[in-house]
Each structure stands twice: as C-alpha cells, then as structure tokens.
Length: 280
Ligand code: SF4
Image 1: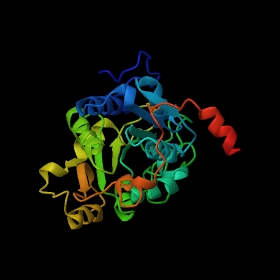
Image 2 (image 1 turned 45 degrees about the horizontal axis):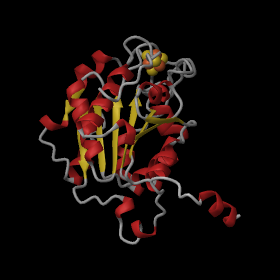
Image 3 (image 1 turned 180 degrees about the vertical axis):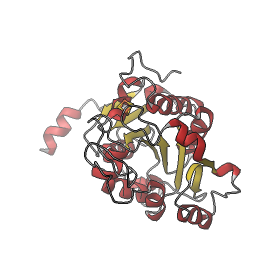
C-alpha cells in the first residue's frame, strides 16, 4: 500500500507484527487516508519499530508514553489522522496510567496494541498479559499473578470503541482496525500478535484453535451489557468488536472545547519570530 516504507523490517521471520502492521496500513488506505496527513506514534519494544516501516509521519517515542504524544498532536492539529502503536509491555505496564486516561478522554484517534504476551525486544521476560503459569527468564515458575485483561480495563475506563483481532486473520484484522479508524473517538484494538521467538504458549496454533469470533457469537457490540457479559466469561479469546458506543462524541468535538482550542495554522505566519520574541 501507499503506507509501506522502503525499509525492510528487522522483526524475526514469522513475527506476528508483520500481519498486524499490514492490516494497519490497509485500514488506513481503505479509509481514504493519505500518508502525508497521517502520524504514527510508537513506543519502545519490537512493536516500536513500526514507525520506520510505515510511510507516514512517525515518531518513535519513549517507553509507555506514545499515547500522550499522539493525543497532543491530535489536539494541536485535529485534521491529522493519528495512530498510536505499541506492545503489551509498553501499553499495560509503564503506560497503563496513560492508557486508562486516553480511553476515558476519547480523543479521535486509533490505538493498536501488538499483544504478544511477552517482552520480545529484551529477550523474553513476563509482561502484564503473560499467563499466570508462563515460565519465562524472569519468572521460572510463572508470574503467579493473573494477567491484565486489556478489554476489561478499557471497558471499565469508559471506552467507546473496544476491539480485539488476530494478526494472522488478515481480513478480519484489517476490517476491525478499519472500524477503529472510522470510529468517532478513541478506537482501541488489542491485537494478538504472536512472538515466535520467546513465547511458545500463545502461538498461532493456540489462537487459531481457541479464538471465538464475536461476529459469529450473537454478540451485539452496541449493547454495554453484552460486552460486560463477554468480559466476565474471562476464559475466551475473542476476536471482533466487543463494544462500540454509537453516540460517542470525540473529546475535541465537545461543546466548549473546540472553539477554545489552539489550532496550528497551515503554515507559520510571516511574523512568527516577532510573535515569539514578544511573548518572551
Ligand atoms: Fe517479533 Fe518476538 Fe522477534 Fe520481537 S522477538 S521481532 S516480538 S518474534
């Protein structure tokens, strides 16, 4: 697509991040976005390299802080298409505070978490979404604590678009990310994106065998109670849109906000330097 850069990814062959990124690029293209008007912000981790591989404006931010950067960019320039990407470690450990507040603030942007349930870049430590009994280099007998459920966290924080997809199911994954991009507010997608090098339990085969597609499970994504019930059934690996608030109003469109918001002009005014001097 137009969103593919000429850089060759250095991800391990077979890494789920390839499929996750392809779906993101297709979703952006299918929704009529232009690389010249798209800003991809990534955190730290294997997932963090994504901005280099996508042809758009991009920033490789610091660990766990990609969301506030994305929010700032979107509020300064509401016409920009903003997509933030990160991993489960980045988003649900060091970035967990930002995640909750980004969800409840509901700025019109998309957040993709490439969830492989392990820290890959630092060679295989347990992450917030690792299973309780997953033996890793830092947890030889397993983390012995329940994993974070990202969908439950987002639902509890007041999320208006909460979904999950599987990087290997290319068509469904693209479709789900596309819906997140189109959503008027914070579109959140947790993507099962297997790490073939350090995670031998949450594998492609495991997800293929266990995934339940919400679209085939008589699930109404606009019904909050349906979403809450699905979350309570914690053993299922869902794919699809868990919840979408049809009446969502993006933060920047709320009454009393947009008219007061400073918007970056298309170009700096001729007297910009004088204005800055005057200010100081
Ligand atoms: Fe992908 Fe894991 Fe390799 Fe990182 S270590 S590139 S997550 S397969």
